[in-house]
Length: 262
Image 1 (cartoon, rainbow, N blue to C red):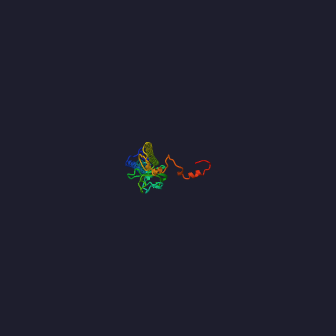
Image 2: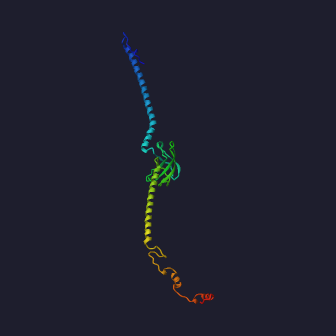
Image 3: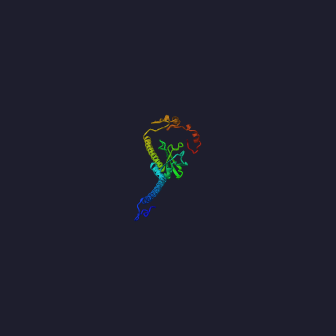
């Protein structure tokens, strides 16, 4: 290390070539050593910066990727390509393939299962979540409701929405109940109108059927089978008979011995 004493000029010292050369050499050597040290410091600084950037990439890179995925897809939606035929009561597992999606995905107790294919907007299933393994992306579930043609065949283009999936089923059920109620009210109104019409017909209209006839029916004696012959066999309402015309009447009277004459 260059010292001041090495460069000090003393009284009566000869200022010749050797005097200056020795001091210039010391200055040059000091500057050379300083340059080496500066280079070393620069190298260490560059190495430190490189190491810092590497650590930032290792730590913040995945986090930034996750944040970007969350911004694009949301943390309530994930895709799965697990082949599956959806049926009511089915207990199975869907695997979320994307590592970014499986890390972000946070299922609710009930999730909505739909397809990515066009024209399947009304095909869905409501799943009750039984467990979720974030490391493997496995979502264990039980199918509690199936709507549309989602269960007609095996599919592998699933979208899992960690929304309140049961609310969709409740909405559909409410709509169905309202439609059923409207039909019931209409049926009740139609029945009331039909009853009023029937009552009116019975009160003032013709008898629907009498003795095999319909419409306004008028009956005569000949219209009732056997009535004429039955009435002809009856005795007249006003008539007289002799004793001889009454069977055993004369003999019965003769047997009476109470002294009278008959």
